Image (cartoon, rainbow, N blue to C red; front, side, top):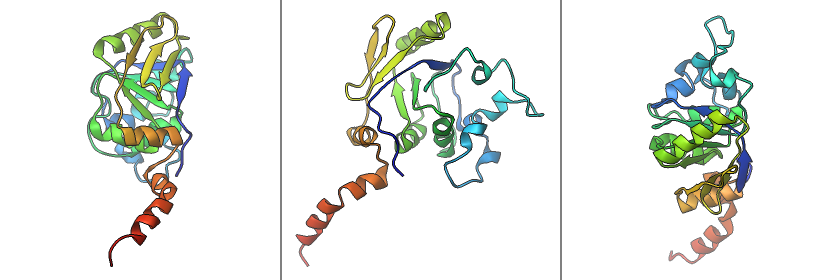
Length: 198
């Protein structure tokens, strides 16, 4: 399934300065029965967003109209815990296209890259600057530039580079998942197969 191409994203951000956010907090296990990648955004951070009677918890950031945008800024060790890819689906389905953190769990990071969410790992110091900027002004804009591999606070121009696997970067730029990538090079695969010895 192809996703929107990711090149340069400029957006306000939603701050979640909580460390060790695990995948069961991102999407509780009771919501994992569905097999399609739809509807998971409704239950993103379900137990933090809603009371047992389904009323929203006003103190949780996703219920605060002050904050919005396509970027989620999380605390250190974001996406730890089980390997459920539904956690990345929930982040995408809610509308986030980028998650910024000072550290990601590897499996969550790869699951994000597979479905069109860009995980941007920055230094602890730069993550703190981002949180402080959003705290000072909820309209703070962040630019995430995938071709240049930089994340920038637009108001101050402060910037930091981030690393990404070159194959995953190419897929993100083209809006490909792994199957789309193979479909795109099937001509080359066929040519290669023709030249294999029998």
